[in-house]
Image (cartoon, rainbow, N blue to C red; front, side):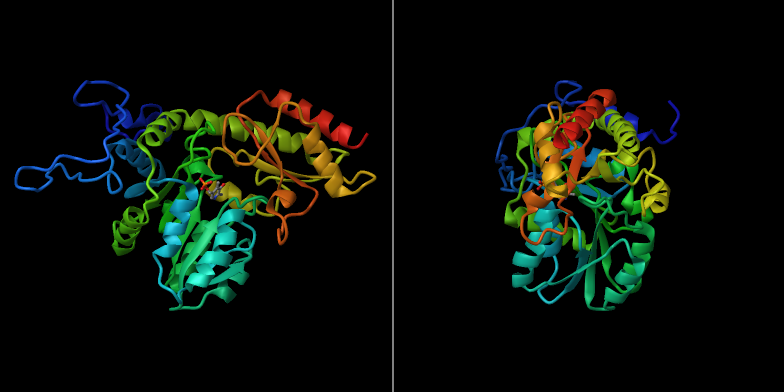
Length: 387
Ligand SMILES: *Cc1c(COP(=O)(O)O)cnc(C)c1O
């Protein structure tokens, strides 16, 4: 065999080609033990002592995700929120951090609530505007820039390479929530980011049947070691069965993401000039403000997430959007994203007071069904909302 680097599809399909050394099984066993035997002299030369600190069930998924991201190490958490909040809790009270104005809602709320009370100086900026970032950075005081790209639910694209340069010049680290891009479409570490975070609940697992999170680091440095001890001490540890399921889900990541990208583009193009649609937000459309950056930093597609702003009916834009979501038969009215089934959601009412999301917006997570069925269902739902 020659030693050309293997394609991500090949790495994913074989989950790095690992076999179980004891049984020669091509699928790993599920390790359920919460504790490990010590040697007679009370050492544990296996390197493993207790499940909250370490679990062989994590090894394969962590190695595969690190390989796909081009990172040094990856670390699984019990959820995307556990992974993301660990990054902020590895900072010190008084540190200044920058995050996007429009981003994943639960994390935004936690930053403005818990993290701010705890002492972080959280400032939200428009991450689609390099000038806004430049103005907000406080050299020496800003310790972290947090970016989500494309960002929920307007799919704002942030230029990772340019952001990394600005952040590093000010002495700050850059962390990227790359959940919606997946490691197949964007590799933030190669663009200069220090840390990548995924909600593995979404594309990485891909079957809407667990919650998990992951961090991937560029360097095995002090910051990474701090994050490792935070995972152990705060106890946001993934379970063995979830880690095993995640490894299974990862094996089809490339097929699922590729289909979702193709269908999302087809849906975006179909509804872009539709008489019952005000606007389609999708990084793959040439008219989308971040399209040029997306073309540069996303390979193989623009993701499976898009939003549709519904034209007002007699009762307004919000009523039309809610009525369209009520009228779908195939799409599932549910939160989350990145599963095999397509989901539709009226974000403004889900987020509630203070939400920056336009009230006529429907967020779509495109699954792996046939695109024509998805389009037909949306078409009839929009017609019924305007009937
Ligand atoms: C879902 C999600 C999260 C949070 O992940 P959980 O697994 O639900 O805790 C963070 N960021 C983005 C972009 C998400 O979609």
